[in-house]
Structure formats: C-alpha cells, structure tokens
Image (cartoon, rainbow, N blue to C red; front, side, top):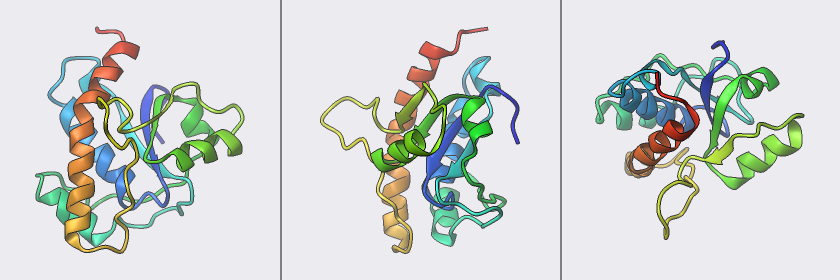
Length: 161
C-alpha cells in the first residue's frame, strides 16, 4: 500500500488498462524533475480481486514499449487508496460513476485518463480484455497518447520542488 500522495489509475479488473497506464505514467514521470519523478503511481480495479496477474497480451504489448509489468498483481479499489490519492484517473465514465456511487467521500480529483487531450478525442479507453494482441497494442497506444496531457495536468496540481 503506498503512502499518502500517490496517483491512482482505475479500470475494471486491474489486469489490462490500469496497470498499462500506470506503467506508462511511471516511465514518463521518471524523466521529469522532482517532485514528479518520485510520485508513486498505483493501479486498482473496481471489480478486481487481490493478486491476479496482468493479462498475457498486456504484458507483451508493454514489453514492446520497453516496460516490464510481469510482476503486477491486481488489487481492488479501496476507500484508503482513494482518500490518499492526489488524483484518480479512470478509464471510462462508468468507472468514475461507480467510484462516485460506491465510496464516501468520493475523491475530489477524479478524472478520465484521456480527458485532457484536445478535442475531438474519445476520452474513454476501451477494454482490450480477451482480444488479440493488436487490440492491446491499440489500447497501449491510446494510453501513450494521453500520458503527456496527464503529466501536464499533474504539474498544475502538484507544486514544483
């Protein structure tokens, strides 16, 4: 469990989209200055179980981008994870709605991962689960496209060192 002050990324089962997005965001933040490069990034799922591995195709798609997620283990969203997050990024509007309905208090900083891209863009990230590798690669690429806009947003809510 990370301490207070992490970034939380949420999907359904925490075995495809959210770990991929978290891995990409961690990779990008490592090249930033402080405090961004030390910012913990974690992922969880609205309907996740504890300890499920990342899907094979998600692992392969991310390895092609130079990021190893083979050690990932799923975890469910908890009130503590939400309460201690600086920002929460969801993959879809339904994830955001479920958090708002199921948790009290719902986090103030609750966003979609792709919502900071300039329009016209679909702010939701489709679930690749069960699809061929090409679907996971498209998902990864949609996440990659959003990462710079997420980092720019984080710069507005996290003061520089």
